Length: 317
Image (cartoon, rainbow, N blue to C red; front, top):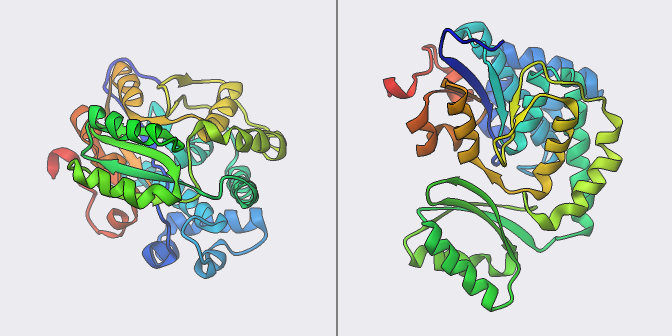
């Protein structure tokens, strides 16, 4: 699918934020692209995803994850059908790797549904036993030097902490004990920063090597991942993924490697990607300065899909 005589495009599947039926339920019930994917997902799991999602009591539960995955893939379907999306490369950022695995052809959609569900259940079992006291906080407006100072203060007190991601200039993800979350947030505010949201269970840190090992043994071993038909870009170092073994490693790396968006942007720019389609319920990637400076960004989430007009690109906003 690579081209040399015209600018290239990429599709980006975003990471997962809190996912609630009240936010996306109407979209899922009426959008024809979602309805088609829902029918296939229901067959794959032997139950109604929409019903399970509607009655779920958690924003990150198994069926909230499956619903987020379905919406992301369906929105990419919509972009292909209505906007002529024919990407040269794709990116799965954090949770978005699951949608990228399906869209790239490395797993049939039904198998990717089952993988998403089984991964969620495996994580749930793991965190019922391990690291129940950890959370991952996303912060912004915090320069690297200021972050180093605050993390140094945690280190002086012997507090566990890890950087779980670098998203943009001044935007980071930090994992810590839940008991120090509020004082850490106050400290971030004192230096002019802002706390966006926290996630529990935590994500993307070296302390989760046990989860990585469990997923590899109990879940991923049951799935026959193929070479992707569309190359992927790794969300932690920008490496180009073209083989099944590389993709399997990437799916495991997400547990114990911090995510970093700048290397992804660098790789896409090196491939002469000019337009990025962010397909999924995204609150972050399409708004990052590093993204909008580098590309013409087309955001296609549930809100944009429900509008009668074509989603506006960055240049039109």
